[in-house]
Length: 249
Image 1 (spheres, helix red, strand yellow):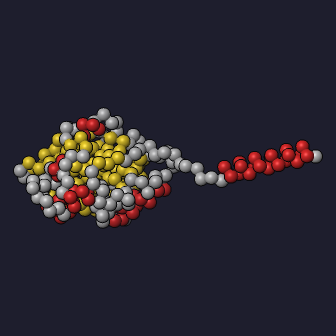
Image 2 (spheres, helix red, strand yellow; image 1 turned 90 degrees about the vertical axis):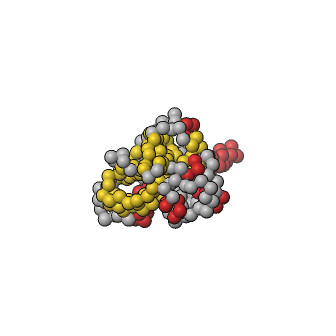
Image 3 (spheres, one colour; image 1 turned 45 degrees about the vertical axis):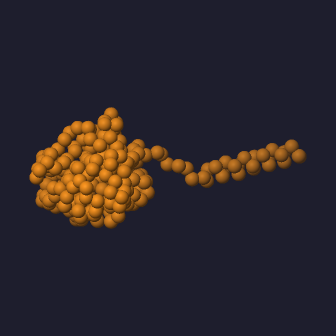
C-alpha cells in the first residue's frame, strides 16, 4: 500500500513539473538580421560631434549589407544596398556619387539581410504617416518584433520626394534639422521611380531617427542620377514594401 502511494505521489509530482514547464512562455526564433548602429543624432545636434564613428571599410566584407547614415563631418550621405555603397556628396553645385567603401561615417545604421519578402502596399495609401503606420502593422503581422529596430525596402514610384545631401559648413556649431537640409543640395522630385532603404524604430529617436518619426529613409532613383536623405514622401499606387523574410506566412 505504501509502495503504491509513493509511486502515485511520484507520478503526480512529475505531472505538476511537466505541466509547469509546458505553461512557460517560449522564446521565439532569433531574427535573421541584427541592426547595428554607430553615432547618435543627439550628439551631432547638441554636442556638435561630427567625428567618425565607423569606417565603412570595416563592413566591406559583410554579405548582403544594407545601411544608411551621414559621412564624417556631415560631408555627404551614405546608402548601402546589398553591399553596394552609394556615397553622395556635394562638389560646388553638383551631386557627386562614389561607389567606394573608402569613407567614414559620423552616423551609421546597418543590417545584413539575405532574404526579403515582398508586400504590395494597398491602393489609397499615400502619405508618409500612413506609410509609417502600415510598415509597422505589416512587420508585426509577419513575425518581426517591432519593439526592436528593423530595416525595410520600398520600390516603385514616388509621387513626390523631398530630399537633401548634407554639406555642413566647417566651424558651424549651431545645428538644426532645417539647417542640415539647407546646408547642401536639396530639392523635390515628382513621379520618379526609386528604391528606398529605411530603418524603423520607435525606440531610437535622436539616435538614428528624428524625434518626430520612427523612420530614417535614404533613396536612389532608378536611373541613378539622384540619391540622398528623404525629407518628405508621398507614394503612387503599385509601391512595393520589402521586409526581412522571417519564414512565416
